[in-house]
Length: 247
Image 1 (cartoon, rainbow, N blue to C red):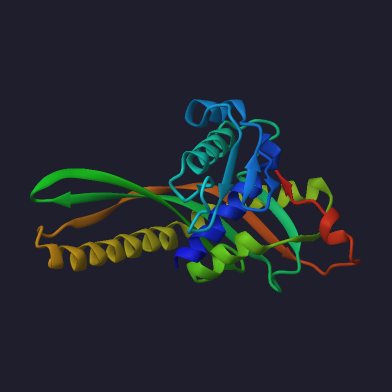
Image 2: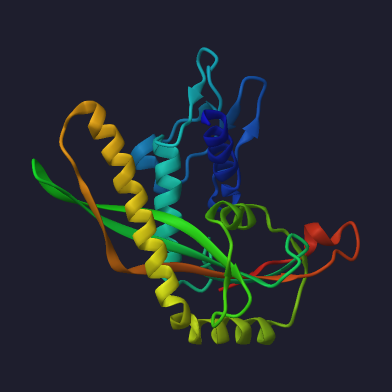
């Protein structure tokens, strides 16, 4: 499982070239020669030699999920996406023609909040993000497993394009019907809270710290909406050139 997380971190950081955060491959790791201004309060302005795998060679800095570089990049991207700028780093809506799916698929990036109540401690509010997805219309969705939805969000590559007006119309139509899946999303939130409650119960049964109750805080936030339209690659270079339209 740790290797899986390391690969996620590496993929995330290496994809940050648009943020003036490009890394150069070296024999023992990756050289971050220039620190972007928004990261300098946490990282300083000196070059760093980094690695995303353990054990780290001597003199090379290990970058895990909680490293200031990862946290700083994530915070900057989220803040930019939520600011509704004209050219966001990460778009909250998108329409992609891809050969990764055979049926039109909708993916939703959700922010869930859970209230953790314990008789021995002050209540806490916890947050997490999750990806859910479905095929078919919102009025009759066929839901994917969260694992499959997350995999599609990570792996879908564009193989074609459609007129901007069509893509905007598709997104607007989906947003106008998003309330049709409200009950399904609330059920997902309750099931997720129940799963977290069970996990806490197992741990606390061992530590004998008392029970904890997890309650979903509704409604949840929809941070992103992405449509995957089935398509076929037309030539070997198109996969590199075809854009994912987003706004």
